[in-house]
Length: 485
Image 1 (tube, helix red, strand yellow):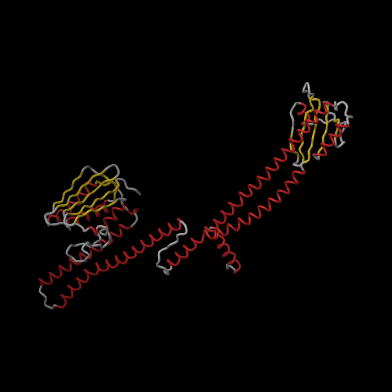
Image 2 (cartoon, rainbow, N blue to C red):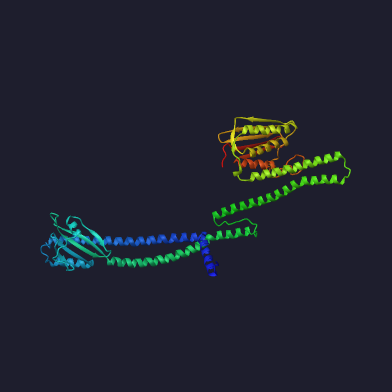
C-alpha cells in the first residue's frame, strides 16, 4: 500500500502541528492568551449579569413602593366598594403606563374590581399568588424574563385586615434593551482587548522563547562538532543554570574521552610490554645455535614470568570489566566479615614474611553483612597486598574492623613508603602509577585500586585514603551492613 504525496503532506503538517503544540513557545502563547481572555470574559459577563440583576431589583422595589402607596389610597377612597373614583382610576392608568405594565384590583371575594387592560373586570381570579397574598405573603417573581409579576395586599389602616389584592405585571423590555446595548459595547471592548492580548501573546511567546531557540542551535552546533566553545545563554536564570550544567557534562565527557584514550594507550602498552620481552628472549635463543642448557633455562624462566605478568594484566582487566557491570550481577548473601579478613591475611602472610612484615587484624566486634564475598574479598586483598608490596623491610600492616548499627568499617594501615599528596586524587584511576613509570621494579598493573574502588562502590560503600611520604598510608572503607538495591 503506497501513500500518495497529498497524504504525506497532511501527515507532515500534522507532525509539525504536534511539534509546535508541544513546544515552550506554544505553551507560553496559550497561557498568555488564556490569562488575558478568560478573566476579560468573566469580568464582562459578571458586569452584564450584575447590571441585569440590579436593574430588575430596582424596578421591582420601585413598583412595590408605588403599589403600597396606591393601596393606601384605595383604602382611603373605599375604592373596593365604590370604584367610580376618577382620581384613583387615573392613578392606576398612569402607574400602568409608566411601567408599561398591567394592574388588576381584586377584592376579598376574588372579584376583579379594576383591570387597566379592561379585559377581565367583574370576573373572578383565584390563583396561588392571590391566595398567598390574602394569607399575608407578598410574591415577587420574574416571568418568562420579560415581565415582573407581584402581588401587593390592600390592608385596612386600623385593623391591618387584608381586604383586597393588587396583581401587578411590569414589563422589563427597557431593561433588556439597555442590556443589549451594553452587551454590544462589551463585545466590541472584548474584541479590541482580545486582539491586543493575541498580539501581546504572539510577541511575548516569540521573545520569551528566543533564548531557548538559540540554546537549541548552539547545542546542535556542538553536537555536530562545529563549535568547541562552552554554551553561554544567560537570558534567564534557568537558561544560565542549564548552560552551566551542560558545560559541566561536556567537560566531564571530554575528561572521560581523554581517560578512555589514555586507558586504551595504557592497556596497549601494558599488554605489549611482556610480549615484547618474550619476543626478545625468544629471538635471543633462536640466533644462538648452540646455546647452553643453563641459558635456555634462564631465558625460559624469564619467558614464564612475562607470561604470568601478561596473564595477571588480563585477569585484572577482566575483573575490572566485571566490576563495571550492573549490581544485578552481585551474589549478595550474609558474610562473616571477621572470617573473610582472617582468610585474606592468612593468604598474604607468606608473602609478607619475605620482607619480615608483621600483619595484624584487630576486630572490635563480630560483624556479619550482606555482601558479595568474591568481589569484596578481591577489594580487601588488593588493599592488603599493596600494603605489603609498598612497605619497607621489617615493617607492619595493621587491619582493623569495627561496625555500628548501619555500616561496618575496615582500615588498612601500613608503615610503607607513603603516597605523595599530589597523587592522592589519582591513585584510583586505571593504570595510574605513583612513580609515573611502567617499570618492573614493583610488580603490578596499576588496576588494583581501580578494582577495589569499583567493588566498594557497587556495595554502595565509600573509600578514603590518607598518606604521608616515608610514614605510611591509611585506607578507610565504609560499607552498609544491609545491601541497598
